[in-house]
Structures are given as C-alpha cells and as structure tokens.
Length: 109
Image (cartoon, rainbow, N blue to C red; front, side, top):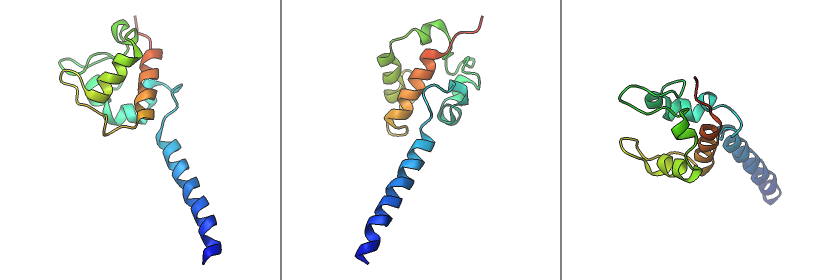
C-alpha cells in the first residue's frame, strides 16, 4: 500500500493545480470574457462593463481605468458604497486579474 501513496499524492496535486489554473483567468484576457466578471460583476456593471443605470458604474470609464490599482483591489475585496465585498468569495489571483483587466480596458468614445 505504501508504494501507491506517492503516485496518488502526485496525481492529486496535479489535478488540484489544474483545477486552480482553470478557474483563474489570465490577466491578459479581456474583462468581459472573464468568467469571474460574468458571474460576479456583469449583473451590476453590465455585460459590456459600461455600467448600468442606478446600479454599478462603468468599469471602462477614464475615472475607473485611471484609478490606482490598490484602490481598485480594495474596492473589489472590501466593497464600496452599494458594492458588496468579494474578499471571501474570490481568490487574490481572481481579484488581481480583474484589476489588471480593468486597468487595460479603454473607454469607448
């Protein structure tokens, strides 16, 4: 039985790493294509991240895209105004990916 422990442990670690990497979007993907955005943010900020009347503000506006990364990270993690906190719901990597995607978004003319 001892000879099977190591291969089982290796397989378990490999599968766990695969699951985590599959759930964490690449920071270079677009904000609106990010499954984390689609699941947690689009209902208030809109599917295009342009904001929704009386709900979440535009995430592609000059004001938001020029905000410091720390401010964006803090707003996502701890909430701000009517926005709920996501610190216990999203991983640090997911929050960082959202911040990078927001920063790389450009406001539409």
